[in-house]
Length: 453
Image 1: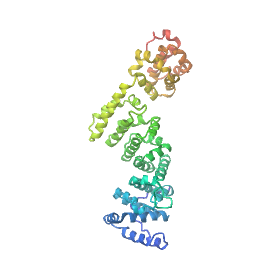
Image 2: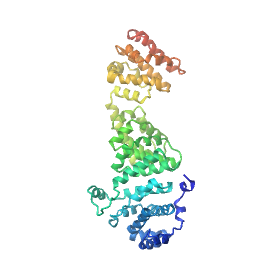
Image 3: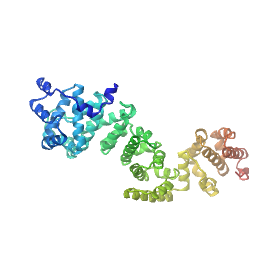
Image 4: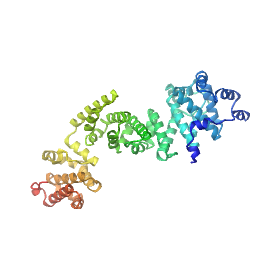
């Protein structure tokens, strides 16, 4: 993309002189349109504001007509800059796009088309304007369109067309941004506005967009990256109200990332939106059980000790703390163990060395064709964390000791070869527990109880 297009600013564009008279001569704008433009163009801000207050829909009609009928890039950029200026000064003016006098005007179509046809300046402005117009619509309009109410015989772009088109463009930007620096932040900014719409949540999930957000959730330092992080977390918070999105979020590395963000963030708005998200997810699926091994209860306590100005944040922290306590009470010791193994981060929590835990729960390991045992063995291949490897070897040795057929099952699952490789590990804790496991495998349950770690 040429730099001059990519780096254009609204101020630069608005300094241009557009030959409106020429467009009237060629019948691309009407005489009335020319009059309105002469009264408005290059005038002081307060004068333009008064014109928009008195006759806003007429100006919108002129602007949209130009975008529909005129394809000269400089003119399209200029009109988009005018609309952007008008909405930035007062976002409530977006409502004027839905005025009754514009019922037969397809106000959405030019912006939706320009998302794909224009250079970066045109795409970015079209997306921003379209998001504001969509958010400013009266909700009664949706039901009217759903019932086919329209005074016009021609096809009008519906709100569903717009929302689905925007989601497609936003996902394209997140995968392959048109602008190397502003593409993703612009897409996330619009998405944070649009995800309040049920249709957008549904389309975004169907477009496999949820996974595109996860890599953007990481501790931020610069002001720009903090804003991007905040708006991404805002998107995830909005998605946490939508069940199909929660299923996608559950299979991602969302929780560890959110917790890392809270640990590393001093920005109150970022902490608030993450805590609200965690509070929403607490009782959904296995999220609550995953939060405990990730150290969230302790983190919440630490956060409560900090001086926050936002009372809602303190209330949310208290609610999250209570919810976590209830969750811990409800979880059986095997549920906790299972979540720890599934997360792949093992630590020396008391249950690993508790004989009662192993005696009471040894048959639970048989569930789903020894699923947890298989994951435990997979950890030996995949983890690079010495603590996790040491605990995994120890737990396998415990399984051999407490399960009547433990030695045979572990051998059949090809665990012996994996453990033997770890006997040469550079970490002493790993080698010690790998040796214990191999000894118990060779000796069997009869003599295994004599071996102590």
